[in-house]
Length: 217
Image (cartoon, rainbow, N blue to C red; front, top):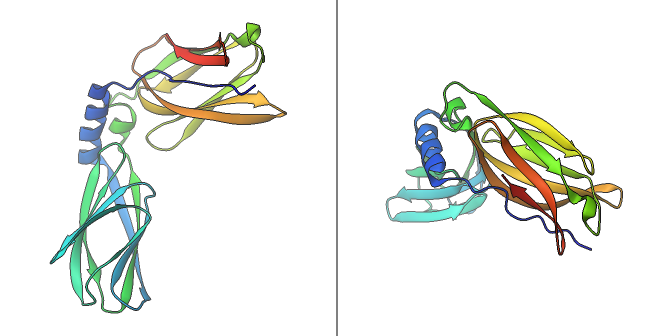
């Protein structure tokens, strides 16, 4: 029977707004640019994957999602490129385009420490508990939750059937990947979002008609 892991705590809009404001002010953006021969002028933007890309200049006004190739008039020129992260942080820079060349761009985005901590400059950590209460489920399983912060660093916590685990996480917003131990392997189920801003947060695996669910306190 397939297990269905549903929502893990909703991220509050206020926390998202605060993280966005700090990220825009203090994030670090680094670009790598190279050129390659093509039949016409273009911008080839491969990183950061999933970011919105807006190119403006002259008669050009195009928007897409990286990775992308954006064709422009075949002439030497400069174009303003804006990179917008999923959390709303953005960065704009002018890039040179050459006739019969591809301007190949890769950008690295490092989120500020304050944004990683949900706007909390102290970097405080909050202790919480993950419970595995799936003992009465049709399929009794061990679980694993993988917390991914704004810096893309992951912290995983495994919880055996009928047990619990306590972990500390810096204040902030996280993507949480949920896995179940099935057929001698960790099987991915779903990714949700959670916001941690105080001690005592809880996540529990509990039975549902279809297997078990992950619920917050």
